Image (cartoon, rainbow, N blue to C red):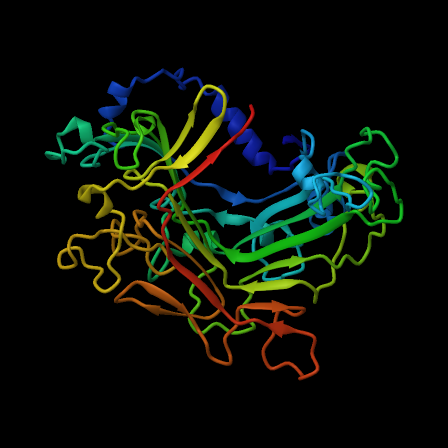
Length: 489
């Protein structure tokens, strides 16, 4: 897959700040640090506090006034282009599975994808608008606070069990020390929030997507490139080989998210399902937190909605995209689509105890979430005991689920932690058992979850086309082992 990017508009103050930083005479040149130097780090880092922030991808053209920028969505056409490469396999083209691709099969094509008009701003609680109509309403006034900013840091974690049979001897055991580089979003606040950082919980993300089915037997300049017919080798200009999607998410945060990179520890052998491939290589972990907030007792009128819609109201150019062809960006029916209420995604992939490993056998690349070894010092930090979440009395199990209400035990009275090992995905009205840190879906008649055709699905007329599917929870997901490998490179 190839990717290209067109034009992205940022506030001039941000550009000026970056230029000023680069020209500052007090900056020092970057210096290469060895693993020995990194192991001696004490946790120094760089705090970042974005203020008055927003962006929108605009199409190429003359400079615009802010009044024009916020009043005219038709020019939100700056884009990413994802281009498929390589031929289709015989298996994918053989739709009737008789081992031959001929006129008895249906045609198959790859997708040429354009993601355009990407915008990030403060929410305006409108599930059909992509950006507020003024800078004052659109800007994220402070993404975090002075006491809870974004952080890039290098630190060292002690007492991290390695893959070998012996246990750690204490904080000074160098075989159990991991130095890591991390990028951390502001921590997720609990209880009363600092008003200065409240906008971080009211983000708005919006974009459009055009996907075109390609006839790979045609050249990129062929007029029939997107006219793939019903049968292989045929063209049909009347087929609408395109899908156009609008995606808008109001009122969510990424607070509590974190990415870590580090060198893995050693000790793994070919026994017990492990591999020496795990030893002293590039490791990482990801905690991705996309939360719309408390889901207990929500109503249909809640503005915390992720909306996906396809009913376009303006553009009839079926095989053209505003990203390239100079036509206006689309508008969509306000009461069409899928409305996902109070979506909370807390995804844990890897940890210092179970790293994500990027490696190669010399020909192909692999991305692997390491197996959990049969070593109590490791698996007791990963597995959880739902009947008793207190490690002092549950047999020493420290693992827990990250959800919108709790995310590990390393926080304090003001912030949630970041060391949970299990994932949670929920939408709609939910119930929370704090004693077990367990989420369940509300099964009552007024539960709100996924609705079709209207953002407010409760108390509608009986003949309304709106469908409310209620709420749902996927809780306590643990990746035991996962490996993705390229083939044929």
